[in-house]
Image 1 (tube, rainbow, N blue to C red):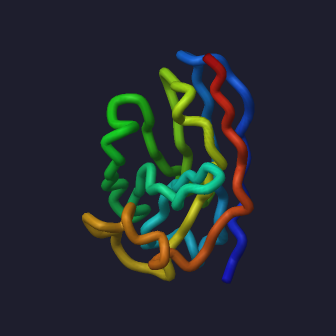
Image 2: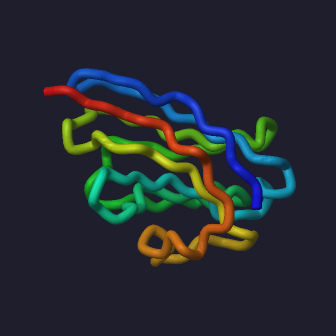
Length: 128
C-alpha cells in the first residue's frame, strides 16, 4: 500500500477558502478512483468528493456541493480539493484516498473500505 502525499490544510475564518493537494505515484494515479474523505473525533470517516482520473468524472457529498471542487492534474499525478465558502462544520482532518484501480461508483463515498491507499491526513479548521 502506498501512502499518498497530502498538503494544504490550515486555519481559516468562515467564508474563507483553502486548497488541498494529494500526489500519488503514476501507477496509483492512472485510471483510478481517487477521493477526499474527512473525519472528526468520535465520528465515522465521511466521503467528501471523488474523481475518476481517466475522464475527470466527479461526485460530491450533498454537504459540500456548490462549495467544493475536486480536480486533477495528470501531468503531476495530483488531485486537488478547492474548498470555498468554508463553514465551521467543515472542520475536520481531511484524507486523500485511492482505490487499487478502476472507476468510482455511486457508492464510493460511502465505502471508505474499498480504498487501498491513504494519505496521512491534513487538518482543516474553520472558525466562526
